[in-house]
Image (tube, rainbow, N blue to C red; front, side, top):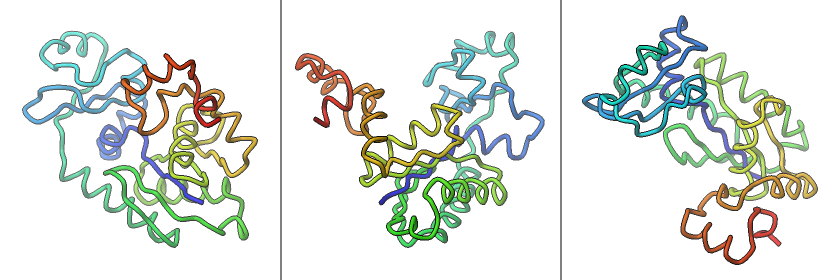
Length: 207
């Protein structure tokens, strides 16, 4: 069994840790020399701010809508990532850091001691308490299913930020709700080919 732990809106979240007055407000992080948007808070996403949006074309819109703009601070993000990964590494037998804010963990057998969902909540609480970051956690028997579970954990708030796909019934239910193009590793070209073959959902592909 794998777990995938992934920080929500990582760059933007790092900025709000040191500016708690901005929590719940629209925030964007822009690339070096203030070029394009490379990260958005959840509120900024709801305002319709797009990834890679050029700053010079959107400055007026940002001012009108109270969007706070931060220049990228990779030293800060690297430090926060290292703290997050160190904590996660202490909680599981094996760890594979996949990106600056994502980590696969080997959680095989942990459910003999504690249900996966309860363990995921423990992970979320410890990361929140020790770093201020909020993470989503997905569990699955493959890395692809763990990635899908993580996506669902962040997409649907009723999950409480944790989804366990150890059950085949739950796997198939979520695969049925997932567009084939949303599966890890399937890009636009393969998605188009899948649609031509009549494969629209992840479950159809799995079958």
